[in-house]
Image (cartoon, rainbow, N blue to C red):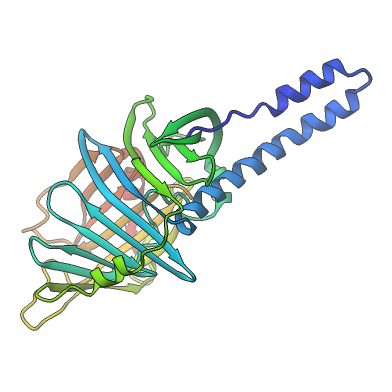
Length: 342
């Protein structure tokens, strides 16, 4: 997904230099150039976001992070008001994710386990926006970087450059014809690529095959089916607050997680309830999980990173807090310091 570099301002200046008596027009063009650039950037982001949900496509996606490489076969279909997805993991333990509208079913054939839950609104690649476009441009600048080819498709390349050190940059490759995101790189402050997700082959505009999803969703005989239950919650009502907001992030979701196992002999491990608050800057997000402290399971504070994903686990009195997101570790630490029991 390479982006055609815009030369609106340079072209306008060249024309004005050659045109006698065009100074008034030149001033008007120079003033309007930023507005045109902003409009174009918003249009591209909306196009990329819409293509991920409204186009029919299927292909193979490869993710590289922390030295590990994983691949999946992805199919996405729209038919009328219905949406269907199928993701088959091609590496490691067999895993299949099936979605019909808001219902998501994850199946592990090897262990005969399945999970059924509501779709996470923070959908992964090739989706992009996590909240409003306006919020993105408060924290990032969209910079065109030229043309490229990905998986046989001509693309426009853009850099979403952060305006501060609280977040990572992202480079995007968008299909010129449809806007579908074909590759994205997460880039650290030192310029290194921390994580990359890309289609190695993709066909856009395929015929919908809803039966390939619906029939597979019905094959659960002999499976242990777990149904995680998410209940809407309020951080303050649960006795917590962020005493100082983390720059650029706002809370977009707060739920209580509990596990409702199917079957009389099923037992859920871990705490009955876990509080999850999700904060987004429009492009990426941070999840903060709060659960009762257990000396058996929570032995010591942990800081880890895999690719662009950082995780911070630490004790807060009688509670265990986990912060996780594709952001610098320093940003997660700000969440940890700001969180307090009321």
